[in-house]
Length: 535
Image (cartoon, rainbow, N blue to C red; front, side):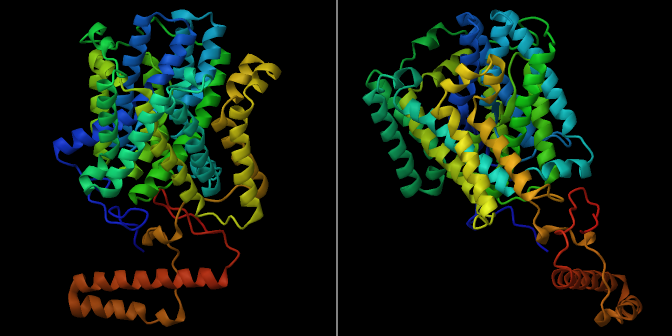
């Protein structure tokens, strides 16, 4: 029973860069830099929003951005390279989660703002990271029970929601950024966005495979050069930035641990676990690699470790970045070592404020044009996951439809949360991802109940050794044949006969289970290598 080949993409196309291939250094650097540019705006916006809300000085804000980039690099290397049983070993970029922005601002303002507020935030972040890391080490059978909360109808809905919720962020950049939206936006930025988007699509459609794989990078660089020539890309901040900026643990002081901020951050991490779970399955689909509950557990351990490290290094909670999931799909460059290279580049940028300032000079319209393509592909990845679900079944259709409605509510009526909820509750619920993911999980439990085993497991990919042994009448002479093989042909042919007989018994068992036990519960889950009793 063969697994899906890692060299095949979801549509069966041959990939020149499968997930475990180590590319030549120039390609690694180029593809890695493309990942950095794709995620950069989303990565730095969180420290900018939090730092601005807490009234930090410009120098402190720059330090937060450098610390974020530095820790993003470490987190992405842990996730893509893997350290023991930590990290999914998939091309997943780690970034600061948007879900934590409102809760962190609420925690910080409640603590009085300034660097004193950061200490309370970091105490909550460290605690939540350790708790997430510990959660992902639960016994395999217990963890699979938890993972049964996230069948394809839930993960597909959450990934789709991520793409839909992120698209408005990109579209605001398309017109020049959020501050300009109320005034109708900047037509010149819109022109940059449309030109960048068309250029990226043209390169993907007409370019050679290598050019297509770096289409987003070419679009960002080309759009920035055009904007610079027209006077709309400003690099003045580069001259005012330091050459070297080293991130040190507890730069702002020792963290403070308070129970309500910790509780709020634990809830945030529950939501990010759903995000990472969905993104891990989505990336597995894109690169053609099977993802089981152990892979998800390793991805969540990386999330927890990165979040705890983030609190130590003056940064924030980390999650698998949906932006780069779209980039992997768009470029079809599936090697996880490209993300490792991106992690190294992020660490360098975190140590070189001048280099980070150059990247920060990309005009919002150019970023928005490229991001619109990528976020649309994120939503498509969710729709493809939903393709595994029987949406003709009314209960599944209701789960998807109602969850999408909940996800759009915060963006449609944002004032509702401010006027009718406490600051703490509003900071948690005023998030499309939070409401949509919660609605999908609750409705799935209501309509489908708690599933058994790994909900994403393909019964045709279970290892042969774990299949139940069933001896049929047609196999009655098998032991005699095996004995004869041992005597007449030696151990090699006997071993071959053993394997052939085992395969026959597995196929026979599959047929018996399919025809005689239609009410049995799915194939045994063997993610940890041990057979689980069926039904």
